[in-house]
Length: 529
Ligand SMILES: [Zn+2]
View 1: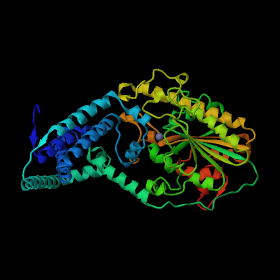
View 2 (view 1 turned 120 degrees about the vertical axis):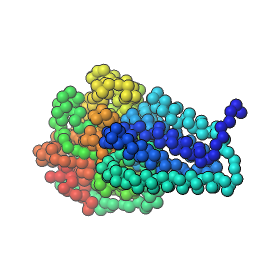
View 3 (view 1 turned 90 degrees about the vertical axis):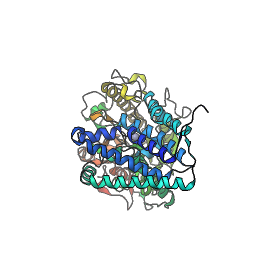
View 4 (view 1 turned 45 degrees about the horizontal axis):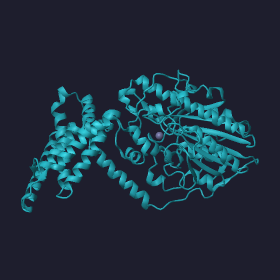
C-alpha cells in the first residue's frame, strides 16, 4: 500500500460527524441567520452547530462498531450529499412524505433530476469523503481500551450536550418554538428521523388488515340514461396559470371557447403526488389522512366499481399510488400501448384508450381516470410537443438554477398550453360519442408548483409551511348537453369561489355516478342538486 492512515474508531466517527455537520447544513445556517443575524448572535449560532455535532457524534458512537462503522458512515455521507444538493438548490425538505415520493419515483423522473451540479455534490460531499473512510485503517487495540475510549467519548459528548442545552435553554427553546420549520433543514438528523417515521408507517400499512367501506353502494337513477365521467388527474397545475382564471398570458386558447366551470379556490391534499393521489380518492379528509389508514381502506373507485360502474385507470404519469390496485389499469407510458409518443409518451394518447373502453361498454355507466404527465418538473420543456412551444425562450435543462425565472416560467406555461389542448381534445371525444346520453369531464390537479416565488422551486414542502403556489390547484368541469339537462349547472357555477378542496372529490365522484351509500356526504358533493 502506498500510504496508510491509521486512527481509532472514535476519532473517525468524530471527523465524519464534524464533516457532515459543516458540509450538510448550508441551508439550515442560511435560514437561521436570516432570523438570528450572525453579528449579534454568533455565539448562539456557533453553539447550535456544536450542539448538532455533539448529538450526531453521540448517535454514531452508539451505532458504529467494528463491522458497522464503515458501511454506516459511507451510506450517511452519500445520502447526505444528495440531500444537501436538493435542499440547497431547490429548498426541498426531506420529511416522510418527501421520502415516500423519492422511493416511489420512477427512473425517468429520477433522470430528470440528475444534473452536473448534483454530480459535483455527490463527488465532493459523498464519494471523496467515503473514499477517505474506506481507506482508513482502524487501529487495533484490546477490547477494554476500545470500550474505555468509546465510553469516555460518549460521556464527554453527553456532558457537552447537557451543558449547551442548559446554558442556551432559553434561546434554544424559543428558537424551536418560533421556527418549527427550521429543524426540517437539519442534515442528516432530520432525514434520519423521517426515515424511521416512513418505515414505521410502511410497517403499519402492511400489518393492518384491509377494511372495506361503502359495501351498501348502489346506483340510483330517476331515468335510465347511460353516464360517463372522465376524471383527469392533472400534474403540478397551478390555478393561477390558466387564462380561464385570469392569467394574463393566453394559456387556454382552446378551453376558453368551451362552456366550462373553472373553480378558483380548490386546494390540494398534499404538496406531492404520492400523498395527494391516494388522499384524493380516500373518504378521509386531509387532516385525518395517513397512508396507513387511507391505503388500507376502500377508496371511491372501489366503491363506484362495487356499485356496478365500469371503472378504468389509464396512466401516463407514474402509477396510481395504490388507488387502482383493485380495478382495471393500463400503463400508457409504453410506446407499444400509447400511440402518441416522441421523446416521451403524450397525455393525448390516452384518449385512444378511452375511446376503446367506451366502445366495449355500450350500456353500463363508466368512470375513467386519466392520470396525466401534465406539468411535471423540473424538465418542463420535455412535457409538450414542439408545436406547443408558445412562450419563449424556455429553460432547456432540468437544472433550474442555470435558467432565469422567465425561462422557467415560459417552459411551465407551455405545459399548460398543452394541457389546454389535451382537455379540449377530450371534450371533442366526449361530444363525438353521441350514443352516451350524459358525459362529463372533471379535471383536477394533484398539487401546485413553486416557480421561483421567494426563491422556491418545485413542490413537496411540508403542508404546514408550503406556500399557496404549491397548494392551490386548477379544477375544471365540463358537461355535455344531456348532462346539462339533468344537472342544474348554474347551481354548480355558484360554487366556483367557494373554498373547495380535494376532500370534496370522494363525495363528488359518488354524486356524479348517482351512487347512494352511507359513506356519501351530500354537503361535500360539488355537483349535488
Ligand atoms: Zn404530482
